[in-house]
Length: 114
Length: 117
Image 1 (cartoon, one colour):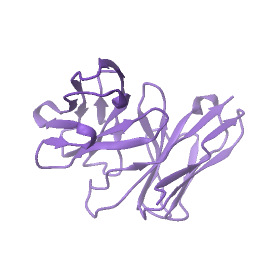
Image 2 (image 1 turned 45 degrees about the horizontal axis):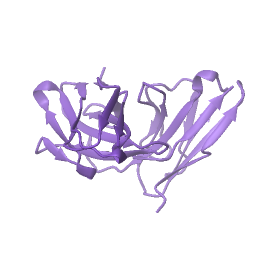
Image 3 (image 1 turned 90 degrees about the vertical axis):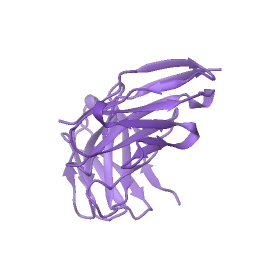
Image 4 (image 1 turned 120 degrees about the vertical axis):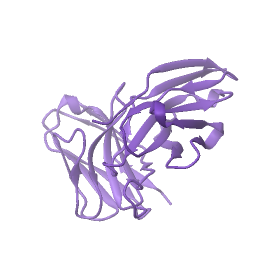
């Protein structure tokens, strides 16, 4: 069965620190990859997506992610976080043989201290 | 353009009661989905629909039913509510681009917080 692992459940950073959140998936075929963000009390919003092409994907608010096929990874990065980045981040995978479904990771809660 | 609208936003039920959650989207999306979000478990797919009049089971369908009588609406029903169904429920929709695997990304509603006592 397909699965998505986010190994960092809680991350605490100070403003201006660099961020990297890990995401690994288990599926051997073609995948579409996503990062969603959920700010406190709000719904999920798309941060960035990878369908094909350049494995380094840039999203909104200065976030980027790199797809490394050999490692089945899609880690999220930001060089300098802000207090407003405090949120929960979800990695999600849409696999080729279940095109209608997104499989979500368990999420990473990020707290940025001012 | 409201996007995806869920009603109600909050609800408290007693065990055994039934209720229906409504999801409406105004983006003319083909696909619609119901998820539940529980602490430490991310989002899990309950049911989904690939078009008007069609529904299919997701990862955790037991205890829920759905209907898609109109393209813009997707209803989630709890037949006999149980405390284990206390959760936050999210509806989402997505466009169909005409290729397998390309029905993303999904657009989410604001959620319904449901408590079963």
